[in-house]
Length: 339
Image (cartoon, rainbow, N blue to C red; front, side, top):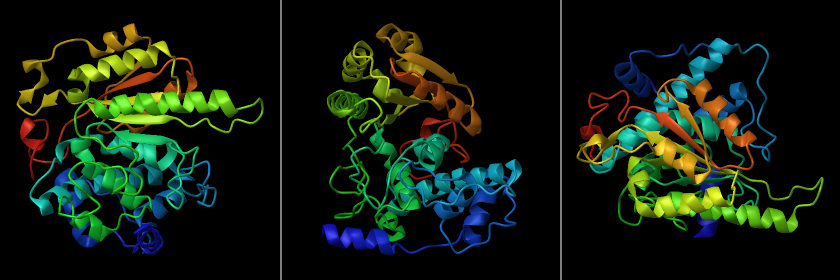
């Protein structure tokens, strides 16, 4: 089985952005970035590497940004990539007639920023010991994770995406470690993933303290977690995050998808506390991003601030719109079923 998946990772078919996908992007988002200079048979991940530069400290083979590619072309490509992830995730749910499209569509910008330029990882070596760890705590949004694993070259093919939520597929309805290449943690029960993220950050701190020497920082990876309101409502996340603050796990960065929607409607039905103040009381750094739907630069700046404080874990409170780009955006109806 392992050899088969390795072969699949190497032989995953490349694809161009089809005219059909162009029409979907145009219909849902009302704007399609110009394709001038972007025509290629390479997958979007390769196009992004050419314009955005290398995404991983280990993977130095990706082409650096060329001086001729201006800020306008970069912004156009990034907007195209984000919208592609949104539609690809929603299409998985649509094909399965089951799943959660809203959170992937709302979280696509933060996932794009993480996977395209922040995290260090190697799809050809998923077990590289100093890789940054990524945990999708709101595991019901796994269509987002599978989209990113596919687009960045892990052993998740387009055919695997078409088998989303089907028996014996490697794209189950919630992420499962040991089933899908690149999935670090099995998540689904809300609060579990963010708590596992604390454990991963503790492991990094312990290994770093044990093996790092001055001038030889062998273990210095970050742990990134995407979570939602449901994770914040669970008691287990409070206990774990209190410990993270106490232990000063500065290499733990949590991106909180603050979309103010839960399965029954608005979070105000059952949840009115100030989450930011609670995490500040735990000893965390709390940073607010007001436009998580569109401002990729704000996300990058917030993550850079988080990375610069190695004595406090960071909560990025990111305002997003569930189901962004769909007719059900901003409503509970965009969360728990096909659009």
